[in-house]
Structure formats: C-alpha cells, structure tokens
Image (cartoon, rainbow, N blue to C red; front, side, top):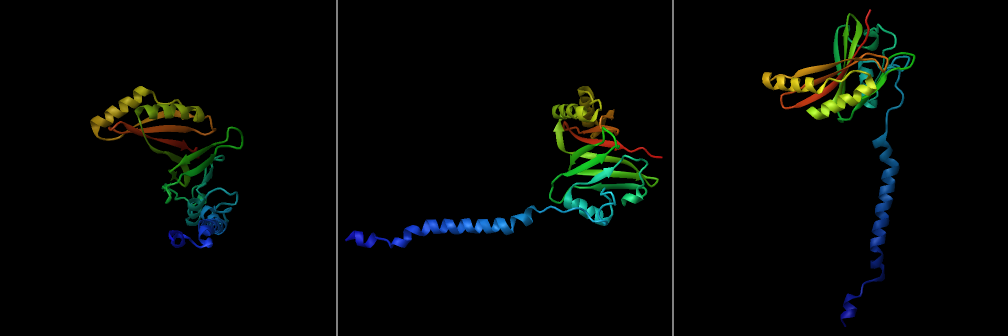
Length: 223
C-alpha cells in the first residue's frame, strides 16, 4: 500500500533536464544579445575626437574619446609641438586619469620616424605640461607604491627598456630615511635614458613609511 502513495507521475523525472535546458537557453540568449554590448569598444575616432593623422587631441570631444578608448597617442617626433593644436592650454598642465573604471590607459608616445621610435606605457594617469604654447613634458605614473626592495628592482628592470641608469639602492634608502626625518616625501631621479629615441627620466618619490611611487618624465624639446 505504501508504494501507491510514493509513486510519482512519469513526467516528474524529466523536471531537472527541463530546468537545465531552460537555463542553457537563457545563457545563450544573454550571450548573443548582452555580451557584445558589455565588451564593445569604441571604433575609430571622428575628426572632432582626433586630429587628421589620428593622434589624440585634448579638447572636450578628444578627452571623451580618450576616456572611452583608453588608448591616447601623442606624436613627439617633430618638436617643437604646438600646444593649442593639441587642444591644450598655452601654459599649464592637464592630467588624464584615473579612469572611472580604475582601468589603465595604454599611452603611446612616438619619438621619431626612425628606429627607435617611442614607447608604450600602461598607466593609471598621465600629465601633459605646456609653456609658451608648446608641449614641454609628459609625466607618466606607474600604478601603486612599492617597498624599498621592490622599487629598486623595478627601476633596474625598467632601465633596460628605457636606457636610464637606475637610482642606486643607497640613494633610495637615503631618500626614505630623509622622508622619515622630515615628514615630507623625497624624490630620487635617474639620468635621462635615450633607448626609445626620446629622453626618459625615472623618478621615485619615497615616503617615510618605507614605500616609493614611480613615474617617468619625457621632456619634449622646445624652440
């Protein structure tokens, strides 16, 4: 008699398979219609967003495109470079970043028409500085802070790519010690490296807590 009460209709055993099929169909539909929109990247910039050679400009429209694509490109190959033509102030500085998504920019600097011809920097933010209506420098920040040992090894590794002579461990240690005593950050600089075809100086800003941040400064020749 108990068997009569526990017996289930035949269609019940098909429920798990039916549910699984419905879930798979839903995922497939989402993949077709939603995922392309989530991963969509901007197409080529319009003439209001880049110049006629497809280099970045820093007008309102140009900055909006930089924020959308995160691939700014600056041509440094024919200095002096007019600031106004890039949408920059004649005198001042403009910082791009950090991005609203906290993702990095892929900044390309072209140094010349010949080899070596520039570098690609992955950076959370960068600053362009102008004076006398000419582009003077581009400052590129590395992400995060590193302890003394990590900073020394990191700069030594980057020196191979950019050609500068990395600050010594002694100079970094002295900067941290001075920052601890003064309560103010202390900056240690490398010489200028020319491996990429443009002068790149590394800067380590060290703090009394024993950490340093790393930036690069590319100086643009002016007339």
